[in-house]
Length: 135
Image (cartoon, rainbow, N blue to C red; front, side, top):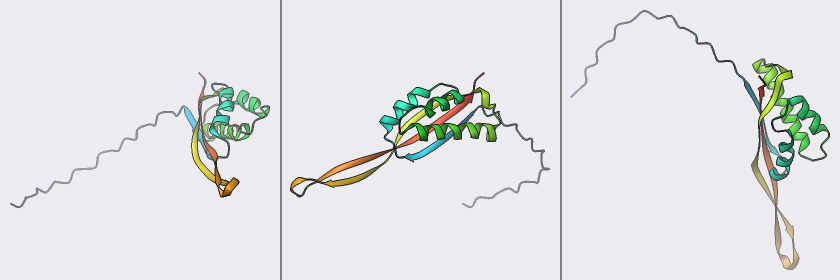
């Protein structure tokens, strides 16, 4: 059996009501494939978790670890995103969440005795920083 479709009559266009977007209270920044092992980067991330952005940047300038520079740059990027994109107040920003995750692993080989090869795994990290306004 064939279906018989009924023609719909044209209705006048209804006014489109634009919904206001809720105010964004969080900004984030992600750095991928950072050439620091995640285990060592987590030691540095634990120092600044929950701190104000300005305090965290000051701490990271004085930490003598390789992971402090990429983490500091990611925090500064998240703060810049909050100020420029979401119009949040820079003075009240704090680090609400910081995650250090595994990224790709680069595999290398080193010659060993008796013609063998020893494997070397060069680990990389993904750094995720979220900042919020303190109330």
